[in-house]
Image (spheres, one colour):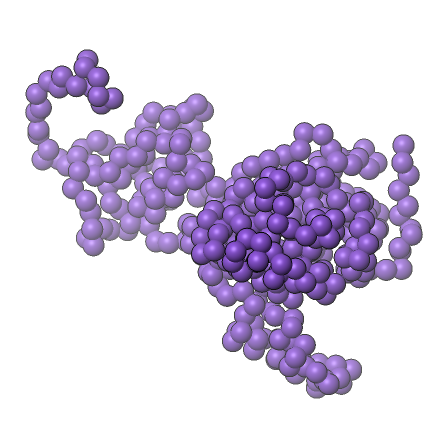
Length: 391
């Protein structure tokens, strides 16, 4: 059994270890940072070898991105995922990589023109910033604080004021400006005390209906403190891993819905002191913040479970017409729910006269609410079934 050295970097903070290790990995490939994962060969052919060799990740969030979208890659590193996504979103899409490591940013930017010439268009850019603070552009901050000595208390206060102004007036990533946020084995490098802010930032930059697709290493048990305090294990994406159930909980607490495990590695990548660490990809959606309006709509849960409950506490019973507000009706029609429900629109649409809907309790929808209480139509026998064949 391999013995873990928990004291080799005891004098170095985990944050400093991350910056140092990835700066070095931008120059010399470090296989210990990589949990191998395969990507479509045709998407890799246009990407320079140096980028491929110095990419470090544990999964693949790219299948959850669509054409024409604006995408942000958190912790973009060498830029491999960004250059893959450039081809996925196409010439009308846009890809923004965010990283706080200068060496990695320089490496990724070095090949922008080359990749653009190979695919026929330029739609990728890389920005210097912290993924837990997507509003603060560190390059703008550097430009505006040159010569500012922060050992002076007054200048320290001035620095904070400059940061706040940049976040407000020139945000690196603006509110509700992104269709999808992806990341590949980076969130576990963020300090525990910054993680709530990290998920809040992902939520902030996504527009209504946007989604996050995050691949990361997760653990099956809590990681003990002595492993968390090992900078080498932390910078290696190990000891900062989310416990797998808490990973999903973080999305829920940030306000996402439709949260699900899209991919999960069956066998652990590494096991340390009996704790298993494996890759998982979680996809989550934004868009349940709008008001609830009554438009006489109903949904029928198809099964196979007897009943299910969504992230807003709505309960759906198999085969039964459940009343929902227009917002929930529209959410359920989309991924990841659509295939599990039947959708019943009112015979007479309800427009601007719609009243607020009480979503606090589940209730059934009587068919007459959607058909209309004065609906008394009688039809003749049909000789054609819905699939076009004669009955």
